[in-house]
Image 1 (cartoon, rainbow, N blue to C red):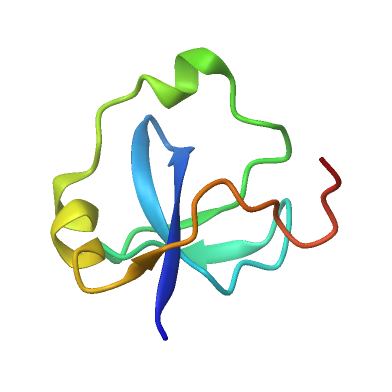
Image 2 (image 1 turned 30 degrees about the vertical axis):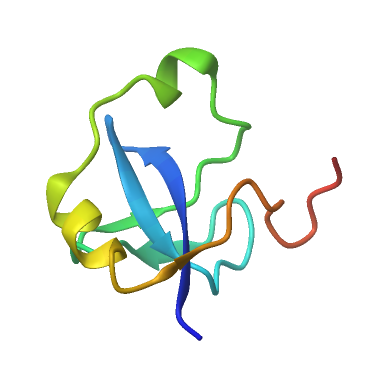
Length: 75
C-alpha cells in the first residue's frame, strides 16, 4: 500500500510519501520537489499555505495516513 501525509514545506502543503524518517530527513514530495522535513511542528499559519496541485493530483492514487506522528515523535 502506498501512503502519504500532507506537510507544509517550502511555502506549500506538499504530499510526502509515508516512509518519512523524522525531522531534518531529506524527502522527495510526490511532485518531485526535494526538501527536508521541518525541524519543528508546523504552525497553524503554515497549514494555511496553498496546496501543491501536482502533489494533490498524484496523491489521489495513494492512501492518506492523516496526522500520524513522524517516527520518533511523541504526541
